[in-house]
Image 1 (cartoon, rainbow, N blue to C red):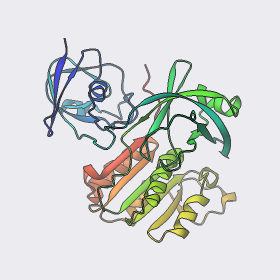
Image 2 (cartoon, rainbow, N blue to C red):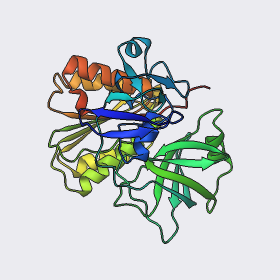
Image 3 (cartoon, rainbow, N blue to C red):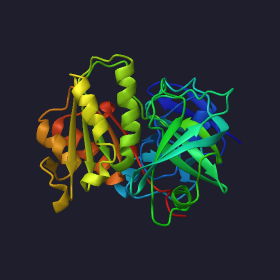
Image 4 (spheres, helix red, strand yellow):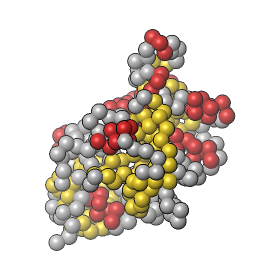
Length: 339
């Protein structure tokens, strides 16, 4: 028995089976709700349950949906399964509706060590295949029966190779493979593109981009796409890292700043080493934005990286600087919630 789900305020209706999540059912019907990790960790798919009951298909992280939020009717649509007909409140994303999700083989073309713990992996698609995607989206690498999500660091116009920035995580099976065993000409499989983190081109608002660590990857793609389409919107990018070495492509945004009058780059280190001889900004990267902007009500913000940064940015930019909820876009890099 399927259940009917009605989305407000659009009034769109779709059907969901009891054993599938609300997000999966919507995507199957060609309706794209906001989402990121798809495993109950980032909170990007959070919306309001106005009528009906749900159960949760998987454990989710408390940071993605707090007990207080759940009490007032909020739900994680990537994890919630319907138990009755539902009425939900959520935004819908039209821009990705017609982009097909593909499952394809690819060849490792090149490996480039960007830092001691960050590897750029360049993937070559089969000659007859192209991947349509939006700058900022991600793909799932399929290996050993598991999925690992990585944002594409290249913009769509620069698609000779798909570029992934992979951090070496202790205990991470795929990252250990990437750093110790992967070699040029290895064959991988991936599925994508996924995600609703991309530049909203229907706005003329100034843009604030906030990255931490390898959250730089999709931010890089968004910025390069903006330059390619000739945007005249002012952009400022904040990149937070612990030490100077962790700003693994520091010269690239410096180059953008030199070449584009409407672009500004603000690197921020939280724990600079004495050997770094760092004279730039220090502290938390989202705090640097707060220090520079007394009002964000007329801006759009794109934040990507560690969940703690994304959560703090969302909370403080909206509550303290007047950023509209509808102008905050994010992608939190997370592990799947523990089973």
